[in-house]
Image (cartoon, rainbow, N blue to C red; front, side):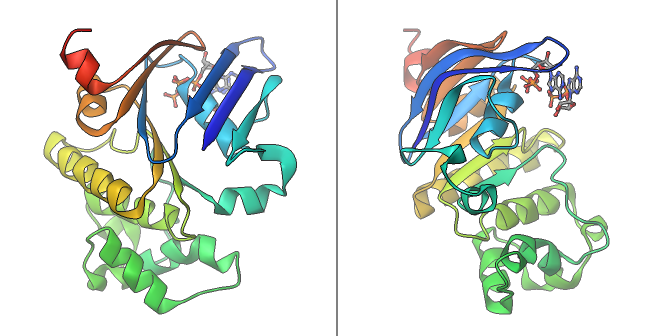
Length: 224
Ligand code: ADP
Ligand code: ADP
């Protein structure tokens, strides 16, 4: 589903954020990418959606290099929930969810209603603005928007970081349920190992731009 081949990303200032990473992510897996702040997690994630270009090496999605098609087409197939969510404050929830659909020229109230259902939000939030929602509800809107184009690949960058622990747990479970039900391939950046162990089928640890551990929750818990 995703393959990184000898991927290196160096920023203009001289920081090598991703250092020669080779990695394959199987369809249907839920991968947690953990590591300290600055270890290169966000940079690695962004190369999948072509928000950052590699310095060397390449990234493939569904067997094709990400630069083999126009970026908007690639991006439609990839849902992305980023830190802070980035909902538009002046738009309603429904309008926010419809942003990726509108780029297609398709705005469909039934589709918006179905997406609200999908993330267990009541229909009445559709006409509210983001600041009238709780943090957990806003995050659900972010997930609904990410899935609006029926993307099968879901990328999340610290999606639950700003939430209180109970909301965080509930939302994590909700995302895992969606992942299973929709047959998604999910790559989630987190610095919370407990969350990674709870939700993921595979845990990658990143340090200084490299993948330094590649394991499963079961193996980690068994102390292997
Ligand atoms: P995190 O990496 O955990 O998302 P940071 O505070 O390190 O949080 O970075 C926030 C954003 O600022 C990142 O998305 C990155 O693009 C940008 N950024 C981080 N470090 C630098 C830097 N040295 N120079 C310019 N931009 C940076
Ligand atoms: P993480 O997501 O693990 O916190 P990042 O990928 O955000 O790590 O950052 C990896 C390294 O690259 C850090 O040293 C960060 O300061 C640097 N970095 C991130 N974004 C930029 C940027 N836009 N310009 C320059 N350096 C950056």
